[in-house]
Image 1 (tube, rainbow, N blue to C red):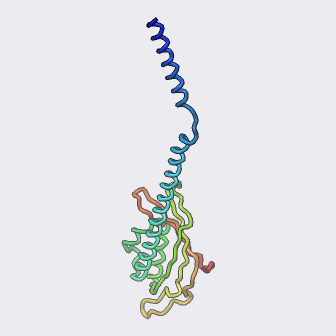
Image 2: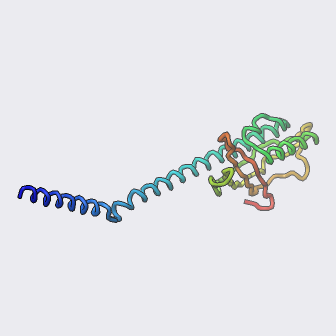
Image 3: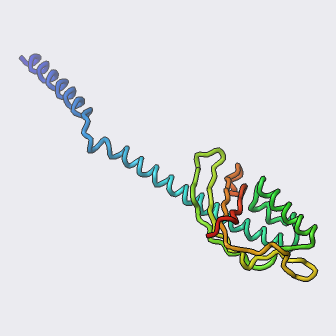
Length: 188
């Protein structure tokens, strides 16, 4: 009788273990969805943080580009070293050519260029990653003048207009302004 009770007890334990295992495999949504939702929320927060950091870095590169191009223009120096810190081709070549052409004609830029840029899009999944920037440039006090007498070059009066730029992240991690356009026919 003792052997029979032992077998019955063992059978009951096996059944209890099986039922416990099956019960543990249930689909209680309140416990299984939370970790996935938490991971999704964390991934979205990480992406948002990465996009904000990219936008901030791109705006810093854009500000550096404007400062470097103003300095290089004021000095009539198309090879100014700060240009390569903030610009990449094809825009780097266009800026250098514009500075060189002004220098060849005895002119330089002087005055104040006001800027109010904003990030319009961030594409971290692009290859390479890019940030689009839109700006309202105020060039009313930024003039092209002749070096010899500081007279304004005719036809070069400044205005307020829309400008766009593209910042690109390069393999070394730097954000450089690689494209830009002045939309002088679009006031802002």
